[in-house]
Image (cartoon, rainbow, N blue to C red; front, side, top):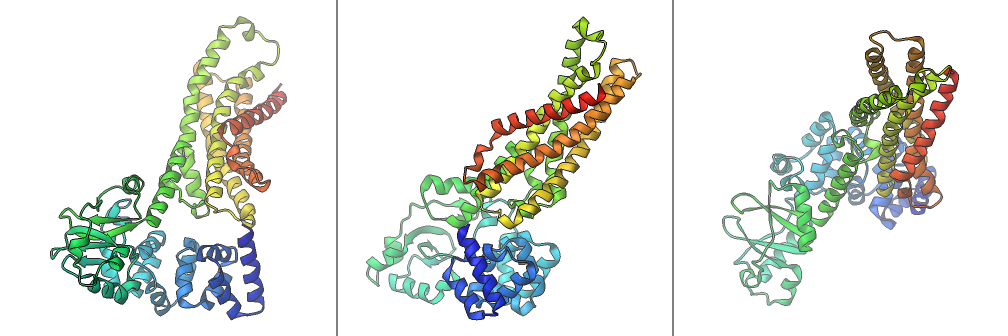
Length: 468
């Protein structure tokens, strides 16, 4: 993080001094991913200004590391010619990743700026289902014939090396484009120029079908300890390759999705980047499971009421009846709010692990989570009113007394307060631990749940005392 702050300060100073050479020097001095992340801390207009000042090769590399929001802003500001210059420097799989993140209007502008050949390549990949080997493969790979010599192979690589995604592993095909084997680049260096590739290739090759799920593809890399994996169609024809950097992205995506599902978050409504997920999507991804948990709590509530009815002394209490009536609601809400805090905590811990959070974005996070917490609180409060009305109507034969109305009112207010506080607690605890240089994962489920239980008790006791 110190490196990013340093790059940010250097860029700020260079912008103020209008020093183009310095900005270009910074882009060459630091890793492109670090430069891109430092750029993202500026407002969009400044990001665009910096980007325009970069040399084309560096600009294209940095562009692939920018988040989709800044990529979209740049594309919308660029002319077709400028977009084409950037796209010409990118591999096909990078353009596919770009298209996946953009709205339809921006995609049309991108496709309009590409050449006919590039559009054809893109369509060859876009035809495959999402999350399959075909969808994540690159078609910029080295393919050689078995009757080619080592000398011919080296010349071909020298001539077209910039068009290839990687050249460490070379694939051998026949006249029908069927995959026969592979060789490593170093084998071209240790064999004589006239040696035919068919004689030195390794025919024991691992490959996957275009329709294979991307998670299974990732397992192949782990199982066989490989850096590149050829992709074939049903006729065993070579159609693309998957590189280890693509698989790392898949592993991050799949593990993030598993974590979200584990926390009861609908992964289909959440982007892998915290800041790319809108408030509404964040709310939508969480409200369904939380509502289900609150409704399931009716069972707990009913059991508690049954227990109270079995204790005669509780029926004739001269005072404090409302406080007793709040206990089942407290128990149900403690479980729901604990899940709320765990959801927000896991999302923040994951974002911190992926280095998606910068110190300047803390205010944005807090405002976002306050709004999300309020929306969740309103939804759960409404469900709470409905379920309590049904419970009390059934219990008292359709007539709800003043005490029950008071319990409904104050428990609903309590839910709204607790949900908002629990959501903020889940976000703040990992951030605080990160700030004091402790592992954010300490803010795990047991700790969060215990703190939320205390929070629930304090809030509900406060409201119960008002009633009494």
